[in-house]
Amino acid sequence: MLEKLAKARNLSKVNNAVKRLISERGESNAVSMADEVVNNYRKLGKDQHVQFFTFLFEKFNPDADAVMKAAQNYAAEANARNYVRLQRIVEAPRQELFRRLNRASEGTAAVVQMRRDLLQVLDKKPELTAVDFDMRHLLSSWFNPGFLKMHRVDWKSPAEVLEKLIKHEAVHAIDGWDDLRRRLQPDRRCFAFFHPQLPNEPLIFVEVALLPEIPSVITPLVDKKADTVDQVNQFKVAAFYSISNCESGLRGVSMGNFLIKRVAEQLKAEFPGLKTFVTLSPIPGFIDWVSAGAGFSDAVSTERFKPALRAARDQALTHLNLDAKSWSERLSAGWHPDEASQKEKDALLCLVSMYLGLGSAAREGNPVAKFHLGNGAKLHQINWAGDLSRKGLRQSAGLMVNYLYDLANVEENHERFANGEIVYSKAVGRLMQP
Image (cartoon, rainbow, N blue to C red):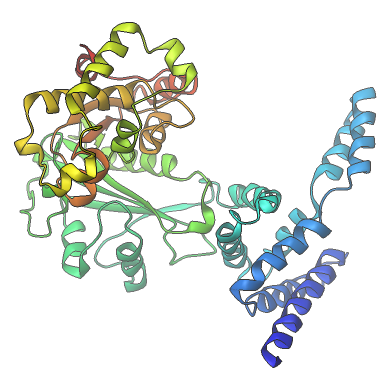
């Protein structure tokens, strides 16, 4: 009973502190009031977050009648005065609340934490999407890449930064300090974005291997016992093999595309001999797509999925025959790329080239492909047996892909992808053919 009363008191305190902060007209008490909200919020239990964000949703929405009147005035007379008034009225008051919270001593971190908490309850409370929209809108401004600092992370970086790399590596897990040390050797690079208000918090980081040629297999890049390439004149290719977000509270805030481009420019300046910038990327969702029948959205079907390609797709599905034995059953029975029949190999390569080369621009397209192609990369090469880990076999039959960043063409490729066109190599195109 006492615990329940304490929780209710904490929720009441933070709500009242929010009301005082949003009603404050002057600047003199703004910092202390913002600190009060932050300190009281941090005392809330996880089960109280829904109540807090519901309070923000219900009490700090725009006034519907005022919005309608302002919109009608602007429609009747689209002058500057009516435009400014409409903008002010349409904005939810809670956006001003979040801006004022940013004045707290750890305000930026607090707002990011709040959004992290909000995202955990959003599925159960979809009406809170309005609150999330307002938070993401502000965070996209606060974490604009123009405000972020890119730093190289090496073995001399602070231990807390290195620990976060180990913790947040999302593509190829870092197996302790020896593994991390190998990934920071002279033939490797790691770069991260930092925000001035969060100096020892890497927000997103990318790992790069400097190599003599384009890689097709991931193991040598993440093997902590792999030999190093010592001679700089052998660095002809920069391979981006992992990019990981460290802060879930910034989900949906675009940073990775800017990071890759800045890294490529810095590496080109450091090593003029580098000629090629590529990724070695996983293909999550591929086997799930095949298992579901390898279908495309209506837009893709109408524009790109011609009869000959449909026939090739159907033939590939027939050769795989997943209706007889599912993919998980095949893996349990010991399926391995090295022992696959030629028909299986051809079928999987045909299907993955279609999955990436035809469907990536669709809303439901592969997220990794959408990221790189949207950044202006080209679908360059599909690699058989590129990732033999359990995860790699399960999600993509061990297949991996190289996306090529031709720095002279990234802007054009970005525009083409934005218009629904996927730029891919002739080699990828040939894999689609019957």
